[in-house]
Length: 260
Image 1 (cartoon, helix red, strand yellow):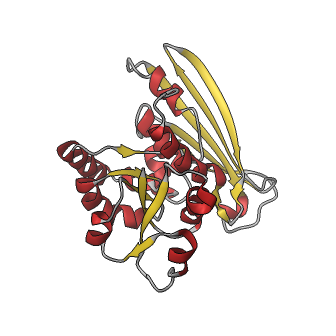
Image 2 (cartoon, rainbow, N blue to C red):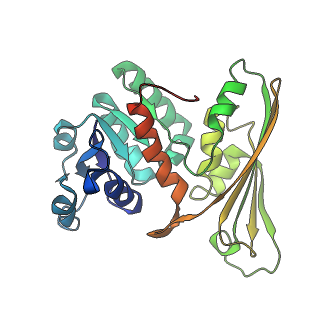
C-alpha cells in the first residue's frame, strides 16, 4: 500500500523513518508528501525516496492508495473535504471533528464518495472495548480523567495539583482544544460529547501526560490508565499517538483482523 502524507513535522518524520528507511516494510511505503513549503523540506525527497507536492490536485493524482494526515486541525478543515472525495484517509488531528457542522460534512462526503476515514486511537486505548460494549447502545457512563504537567495547562506556578476543568467533553474541547484530543475520540467511539465526562488536572509533580478512563454499562464496568511517553524528537507529541497511525496502517494490510 502506497501512502500519501500531509505534513512534514515530528509525526511525519517518525512515519518516514519507520516505513521508508532500510525497507522495513516493503508492502507499506510513503510515496508522496503534501507540504506548503517545498524548498524547506526538499531534503526529504532524497533521504526517503518520496515526491513533494505543493499542489493538492497533483498530490492526490500521484501514485498512492491512501492519505495520512499528520499536520494540524487547520489542514484537516482545509484539505480533508477534497481528499475524501478521491481517497481514503487516516486522520490524527481529530480535534477538527469537534466542530459538529464540519464533522457532518465529512461524514456525508465519505458516504457519497464511498471512502472511509480511519481515526487512530492516538494517545489512549480501549476504543474497541468501548465500541463493543456500546454495540446495543447500553453504555451509560464514560469518564476521562486527564493529568498533565501543570506548566502545560496553566501559566501560574502551583505547588499542588489543580483541577482546571470538570464537566462535559463538549465543553472541555472548547476550553482546551489543543490538550484534549483523547476526549474527542472517546466521545466518537462511545456515548457522544454531551454525555462523556471529563476532568482535567494540572499536576506540578508529573512530567508525563496521564489518562484514566472508566466505562459503565449493561456489559459491566471497565477501567484503564495510560501514561504517555513523549515522541523522542518532539516532547509536545505523544509517542503512542504517532505509533497509533503506524498501527492503523499495518492493521489495514493484515488479512487477519484482531479486535475491533
